[in-house]
Image 1 (tube, rainbow, N blue to C red):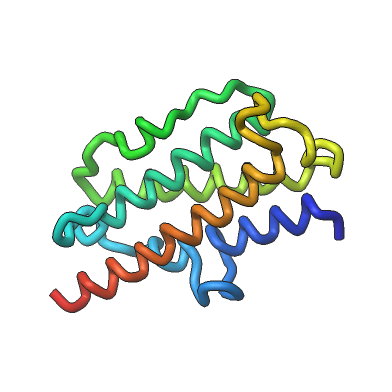
Image 2: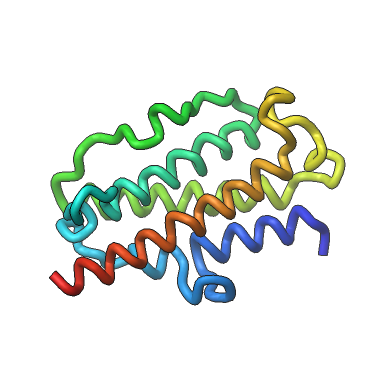
Length: 156
């Protein structure tokens, strides 16, 4: 199996269907979650919805680059989202999240070994490989927070 396929599988595991590293994934944690729980604050922490939207923001932005588009995402805007006001809005967001994650996987699988070593947009952003690995690590980081938030909310 080539390295691009391995990276795509690791990304798929954390977002869509894996249990090997964290014994869960985003889809398992967020599908069927009541929107009011997703937006419920716990002390001064980010909400589950904010964390999910934050991770999706980066998936969508990097996916656009992988599809030949421009890099338009900025860290300063990575938590700026419209307020969710219904289950329908939450469910629609999740559909988009899973769709963009699937498209991201397809793009990663298509990268050649040479492309993985190329600069991602500009030299200052390092390589495609480093950015994809960062997407996986970043996703696990916030997945852990979501799992903890759900446990805290279950005890309230």
